Image 1 (cartoon, rainbow, N blue to C red):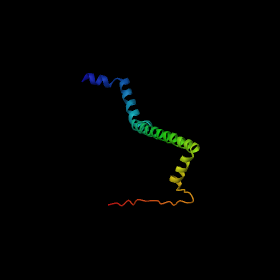
Image 2 (cartoon, helix red, strand yellow):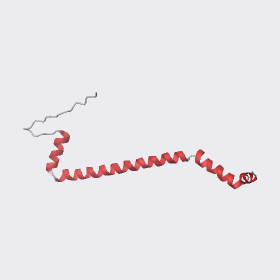
Image 3 (spheres, rainbow, N blue to C red):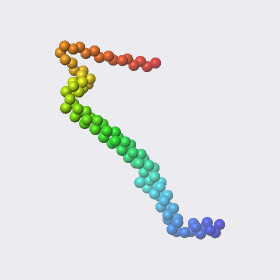
Image 4 (cartoon, helix red, strand yellow):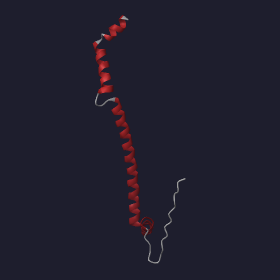
Length: 99
């Protein structure tokens, strides 16, 4: 029992415990906030990687469109439903019925 009281009387230990409790629970940058910020950073890094891949893909598509006229025609037909004068276009739309 005397050992417990002697440990509790140690002003350095009490100061360290009080500081630790303050930093973990009450500070502006407490533990919960730090975990949330780490989660947000991870999500933003994943988004950055996704958009970097998309930019590379689109850049390669643009290069292909500038160099190959057949690719340009295919792109115009698929995306903008363009056609030649003597052609007809039929667009088939599937109905999605919920049960």
